[in-house]
Image 1 (tube, rainbow, N blue to C red):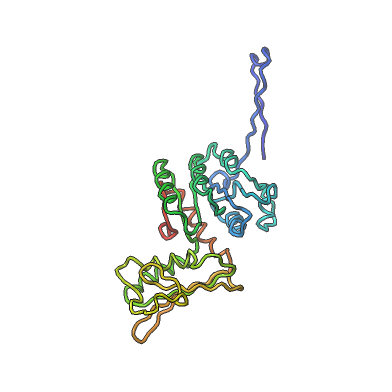
Image 2: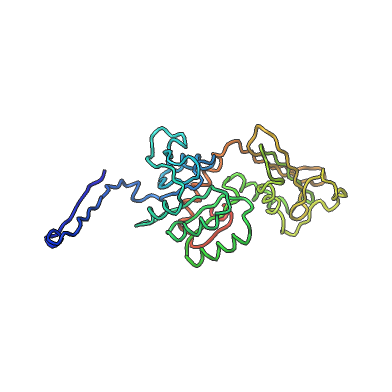
Length: 298
C-alpha cells in the first residue's frame, strides 16, 4: 500500500515554487529483507523456470525481468504462475538496474541471455550495485579474466557457472576421484537439438579429470579415426549423440583390468538447474570477486 505526501513551505507558496510530493510504500518483511533478483533473458526456458523458482523461494524475490521478446507481458504470465507479479518484461536492462539501485542492500542479476553482451551486462550490473550470476558454457577465457579484474576492483561478487546442475557438479567430483585409479576413460553424451560437439558440459567433465597426472587411453591405436570420438584434455574420449526425447544425458566410463566403473547423470527438465541457482543467489551476495564454477560456492 502507498501513501502520498506533499510538502509546501510558506516561502514556496509565496514565490510559486513547485510542490514536491513523495510516495512512501509500506513494505512487507519479505520485500525489505529479501535479495532482489533481476532476471535477464526472462523469456528463455531457463528464465521462465528461474522466475517461478525465485518467486517461491524464501529470502529472495523477483525485482526486475528483462528480455527482447515478450516485452510488456507480466512475468507471472511468462512463467506460468497463477498470481500476477505486476512486473512487465522490459527490454532495457540498464533502465531496470538503475530504477532498483537506489537504497539497494542486496541485489543479484542472473543473465540467461547467453549472448555476446554478457561482459557489458555484468559491468552494468556491478556499476549499479548488483552481484551477477552468468550460467554460460564456454565463455571466452579473456572475457572471464577481464571480468575478474573488473569485479575485484569493484569488490563485487560474480559467479560464472558453466552449469548450475548440482548433480553435474557431483559427477565431476566423483569422476575426479576415480580418475587416479584408471588408465582408460570415455564419455558418452546425448542431447536433443544439440548444436555443439562435444557439448560444454562433456568437455568440462573431461577437463575435470585432466591435469591430475594421469594420461588416458594411451594404448588406443585409433587416434586418427573420427568414429572414436573427440579427444579432450589428457586423452579423454567424448562420443556425442544428438537424439530427441531427453534433454541431457552424460555418462563417463572408466576401465581397468576386469572391471568398468560407469557414472551417469540424466537431466530431463530445466528445473534441474533451479536448486543450484537458488544456492548461487544466496552465496554470490557474500562474494567480493569473481568465482568460476558452481562447485566453488556449494
